Length: 143
View 1 (cartoon, rainbow, N blue to C red):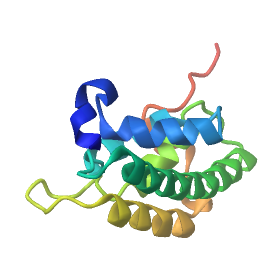
View 2: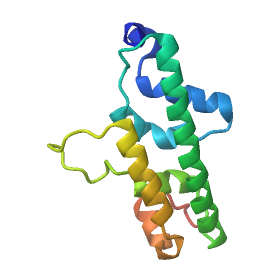
View 3: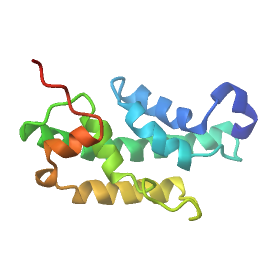
View 4: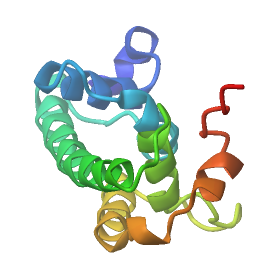
């Protein structure tokens, strides 16, 4: 059972992220880890069965990443430059961000569905350099 390997895997999010890294070695897993660690849990299935579920989750996450990359490219085309643009966009589409603490937790599928919908609605034209600076992601002006 997957849940019997808690010590080896540390966090269930690492399994999904690892599968994403196998597919794309330059995947930005750090941007998605805060969300995943809140919606992932160890599965009560055999490792073989759990791996199939994890591979599907990784595929879903990579599809979301494709949308996020398009939004990041649109922000770059607007002239916004920061090494934190992807994290900024992921934080903007994160459905857990302003969720009340007493609200029932979201499942992986619910969270990623909401993120995918939010990423599709994300409007780069509404983002200003001040928004990026407030998030701590703007670069300092060289003097």
